[in-house]
Image 1 (cartoon, rainbow, N blue to C red):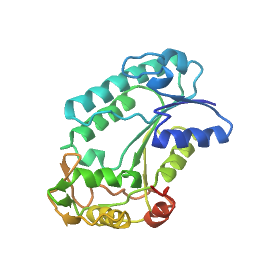
Image 2 (tube, rainbow, N blue to C red; image 1 turned 135 degrees about the vertical axis):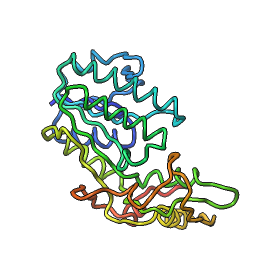
Image 3 (cartoon, helix red, strand yellow; image 1 turned 30 degrees about the horizontal axis):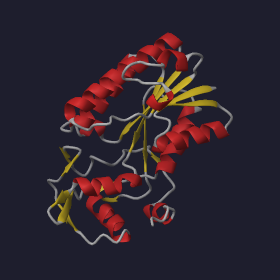
Length: 251
């Protein structure tokens, strides 16, 4: 199959591209640097010619409410419109576990709009809802800094390794369209504040973690259901300890 991966040079994209190429598929890692821009529409018609599957892994460069909404609306309309003209048979998008439960967040509202555009497009589709990646724990910690401490929600999360995400995206890409949602998550359920504390401790960061029920996550207050999958989710194999043990040593 010919598969185009939008955002194919990013964290999940690059791993997915490698996996699909190893399976013998013709895979194009599309990004603005390669002349494919979903915001302007540049290069879309050309790259999608003869394409069977499109995997959309692109993310907004800004998380500001208006900017992120404009990104997902514009990119979604341009990409899906070009796919319709090209006769693409399967559209896959990576979204977020709990997106529909966190609509106080501008980012989550924008992701919901992206999903709605996909459902309305008429193209056979699969939407993958993933929990947060271990690779973004440092960024979550940075977002919770208040003075000398880090305030984070104690709500449970089942964070996942990017390798497990790439495995799941690859499997969906070579299968039939789901025309629905598949949830994926890591193997361990633990409080967000606790998990970030474990990560910082291993990094030698001695700042204190405050488990604050009112701490916001992408602009939304969390509850015990916000960040965890429901029944039937695909559970990854890589635990936090295994993931951390395999991270490159920083000089």
